[in-house]
Image (cartoon, rainbow, N blue to C red):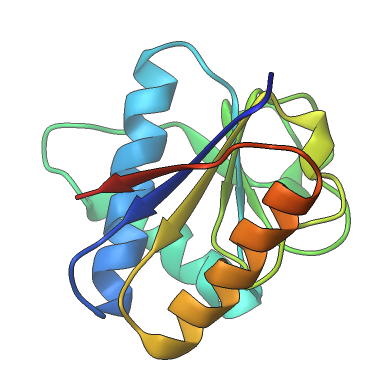
Length: 139
């Protein structure tokens, strides 16, 4: 069964949401997963690319923009195609991507911003309507 986790942050800080996505990706990479970090748009993708270099002084996660190839264990992109083979989808977009079923594991990072929270409630219903049992993880 597909594993879908909603990681619920306690505040509405957009930067904290990106940082948590980086931490989650770093942990998954250390566990041997290949990760696709699905962004809302090019600006968020660029911000995550930058943040992955600096979110932790003690770690580095090899990553690349999907438009530059798919050799790295962590790909960053937005749009309709995930490309490559990954096992974990970290979704930061406001909707569930059409290709979500390709992934064994899906992580949705939720903060308390009303727009983000409402969009991800819709995503939660989307998964439930398809027979999945998403889990909530309050951080």
